[in-house]
Image (cartoon, one colour):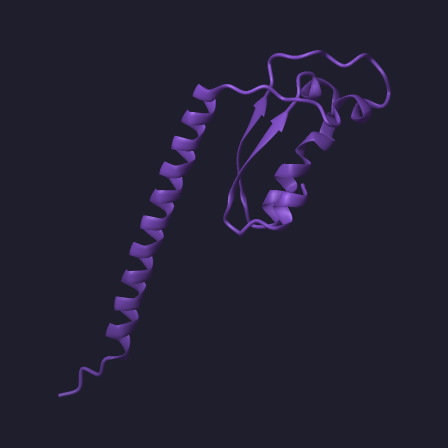
Length: 115
């Protein structure tokens, strides 16, 4: 969460969760989505670790999940990164085209067609 404070607006983020977090965290598990939205970032997905030790049933789920190792899947991350980069490239290309078109339109409006 702290790292989000230092990221640029329009950054893309992905969340990582340990096994069992989805079932036990309740509505609070979406806090990163809310923070990303408020900070002008794009929440591009979540990784739910399918492996690992489940936490024992207790009322304090944070004590079990804090500092926990999360596994990863290289194929999943490669596909995710490719999708996010392609989307960002498309967004930037479209944005720069739109800006150029708007600039040309402004230039035509301010040019006097006097005879």
